[in-house]
Length: 354
Image (cartoon, rainbow, N blue to C red; front, side, top):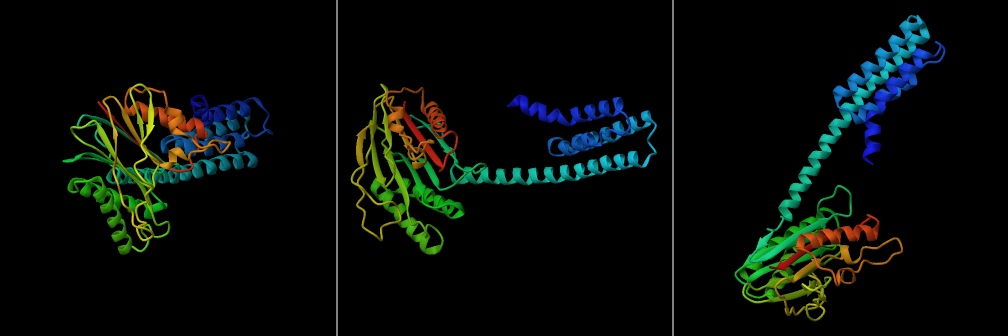
């Protein structure tokens, strides 16, 4: 691919050289103006403004040199060729200016999107209270940085608390709901003594914000989430699951255990349908083990045959150097499974007890 890019970048130069040779060694009745015109127009999106201008000057200069050598510089057809190439060179400069302006606007939009992602989904610290932490957000849409998936890590008086969730919906409405969930989680994680109470605070925050904003979470109506608590002084993890794919616990020897998180509970934002009684389910979390939380963008990723990606089956028996290595291997494996075409955003959060 790098060889192809290099050839494309030198193509305008090659066309000018080819046009010069063609005009120099062929009779006057065989014009090379199309080669010079193509060189200027191809240079426009590839080169800088200075490079585009120089390509145009070189094309016009080479054409004039060939006409002078052949003694036809003042013939009407020769003048027409020069005017054609000069016009193409001028258009190339205009195109270059427009392309650069568009690139600058796109770069600005990307920068704003990256800043928005860092504000809404800040990267967690790599080390929190003896835990190694890694997070990753893989957007399905090209050049997108944030969508409806979310994660957050908070060190609290009750232990390190985590949330991973998936807002049902797309666009800015989903991003608004993500901001509400993460903001409510950070406040509740510090104040509530139980994980069940944190889940209820998130429920109330979504309902309150949904009533205030007519569009927030109003169409799809729910947010799946899994909440986790890792106490400071115990080798245990507690899980509350609100309709979300269960976390996976990878032991140091490669043994893998899904953490169901208690009885089936409705996603956040669906309390109008039924009263959900949250119950945190404990599980042993020994030293050297890694906890993986993910959204359904991972477990529902499909290959060309329509087969779902099974993270439990893919990870069972494997040993990783740390959370970052786990997420890197997982992201690469999903890309291979799907052929590089994700259909949904994917949020990954891995925590290892050191």
